[in-house]
Image 1 (cartoon, rainbow over the protein chains, first blue to last red):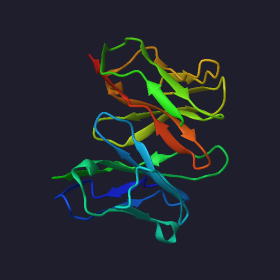
Image 2: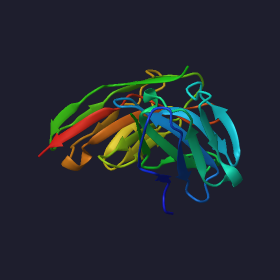
Image 3: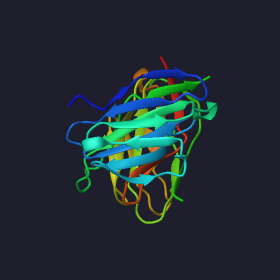
Length: 115
Length: 112
């Protein structure tokens, strides 16, 4: 069990550029979640996958955001035409959905700074 | 929608002091309740959980009891250590997705 891995840890970009983040979940986990955390706030849900299917998206996830999880393994989160308001920590979590065992394990996050 | 309200900090305590962090929730149905902790420079870690009313979660000397009548899940520790310095988040799971809904977090600093 190597834990949830996120890459990169930090990303600095200019406004208007596209960025992509990667999340590698714990290998046997079938659910994968993306959250966003801004300074002084708790994480907010963005979207989640069960295997390769994206089953729910938050209203926070504008059209500029897209997430994929091909083959139900790693996931990517892309932000197009970044804005300064996108600056935040992007967190990935994974879990194995079975009965009451759905405990989410978090990665260390990707910190995005949009200049 | 469902929400979590938790005591805001920051809070500074001396080592061996008693800790209480208040957390109340608003939810339809019967959510599971969690406390997550974020140590400096690290990711969120599950500290403890409770899945039904009157359940008590405990870990590393921390305890919290799911109180349905007061919609609360207060976190307590009898004697804090310097190593407990971190940000503590109360959370609940919502809906079939079991996505987490978090409070704003409370930063705790424990001085020797």
